[in-house]
Length: 120
Length: 108
Image (cartoon, rainbow over the protein chains, first blue to last red):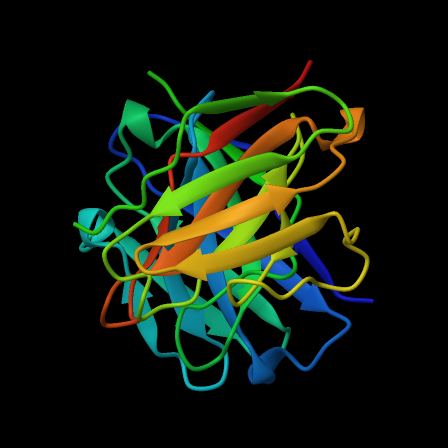
């Protein structure tokens, strides 16, 4: 069965960076993409960006351009999302989700979420 | 930046039909998708490509599209359907994803 298992909760200080991992199993990793979605406390879902696990192509949300980097390691079927220069409003649950390999589309399987707390 | 607009809340009694709308200028060109999210859980895909239902999703969930508006319809609403519902699509270029603000469905 398809599973996406994310790394554990993080607490970071403002200005620091965080890197969240998402290990995929149960499907051919390089046949799909991964999108990252976050949800601030009590707020809605926000699409952050997409990466093709096939060729590493990425598309990022405009508001995060320059602060976010998404990568994959095909040898371990793991996707990573790094967010730099953290601010308090980056406090959120971060989800990875399986997507198409060609472009951002829809998300049929989701990870369990990783809480990132940014606090001094 | 591109936006999808949903009503903040919809309320229905058990057994009635709930309709949740989502509006966006690029919807005639891009497919829409719908997710259900219950408190403390990850979202679940309930409709893809405007009107297709993933396996395991009850038949009471359906989707439709007309111009710049897509609609999620839940027929014969049950108490377990109480949740937040999000529409999702892409911008006109198809390169950037976007979510609607979400609609809280309350079953009275």
